Image 1 (cartoon, rainbow, N blue to C red):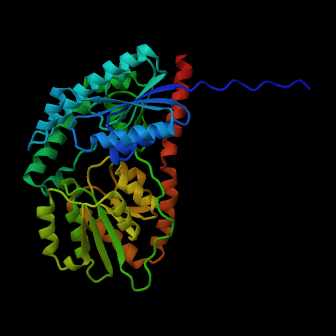
Image 2: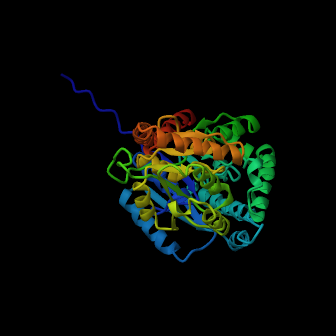
Image 3: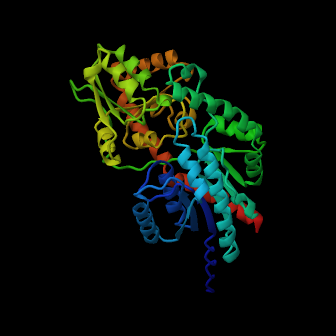
Length: 430
C-alpha cells in the first residue's frame, strides 16, 4: 500500500511584539509582556521591542534575568531600547506634582525610536506581523502598524471615567489628576487622529471592557472584541474557602493607596457590620495613607484591621492564601492582575461592576456592586459581605466558581485568541 507523505510542517511565523514593559520577573504590565511572549514562543518566533524611561538601579539585573529566561524558553528575542535623553527628561519631570501627563510625551518619543528599530529589523529579516501589546492604555497606539504588514492591537483599556460623584472624596492633588484625566479622556477618545489611524490599520483590535469596545466602535469606527489583558496562574494547592467553626471571615484588600482605590468605602461598609465575625487584612501603601489610616483608627472596628504594608509579591500571595474573600473597591482600572490571582487562589471577589474586573468576575465567582457614587458603593459592599456572613453555602460555591473562572482566564486562552487571529490575517495577506 502506497504511503501517503506527511504534510510539510508549517513555517514558524515571525512576530514583532511591542511590549514597552517586559520582564520575566515582573508583574502587572511587565508580567503581561513576558507571559504573552512566553506562550506565543511555542508556535512563533517572537521578537520583543521593550524599554524604559525611568532608569532604576535594578534594571540591569532585571534585564539579565529576562534575557536568560528568553534563552531558556527559546524563540524569544528581546530588543531593548533605552529612551533618548529628551524622552527620559520628560518622564522624570512627569513625577512632579501635576505634571503626570508629560510621561506620555516621553513615551511617544520612545515609540518613534521603536519604529525606527523595527524598520531596521524588518529590512534585515522580514516579519510576518506586528502586535502592539503594552502599555495597554489606548492613548499611545505605537507606530508598528506603519510597517505595512498585518498588525494587531490590544487588549486596550483606559476609556472608563472616574465617576464624578467620587471625585469629591479625593485629595486635592488626586482631584486635579483624575478630574483632568476625565476631561482629557473625553477629548482624546473622540479627537485622536493617531488612535484612529492605528485602529484603521489593525487587522484585529481587542478591548478590555465594554466601555473600551464601544470607544473603538463608536469613535474610531472599527470592530473590536472583548479580551482581558491579564491571566491567572495557580500558585498553591487548591482548596475551597470556608471559615472553620468560630473562625472570623478573613477579608483581604490589596492595592496602592491612591484615591481611585476608595478603601474608605470598604471601611465604612465594614463599620456597619460590627456585630458580625470578620477581620480585614490590608496589603499596600501609598500617598492616601495619611488620610486612610486616621479614618480607620477613628472607627470602632480599628482593632479588627491588620495593616501589612507594602510586602514582596510572594508574601502578599501568602496573606491572600490565608484569606477567604478578596475585596477590590477600585473605581478605575484595566483588569487588575491581583483580581485574577485571587480567583486562581479560589477566593471569591467582591468588586464594582465596571472596567476589566466587571468582566473578569461573574456570578459564579463573586459579587459585584453598581458603580454610581460612594453611598451606593458603601451600601453595596456592605450587602455583599453580609450575604457571605449569613449564607453559609455561598462562600464555598463562589470559591469553586473562582477556580473555574481562573482557568478560563489563563494566559494560554489569550494566546489562543491571538494565534487564530494571526493565522487568519496572514493567510489573507499572503
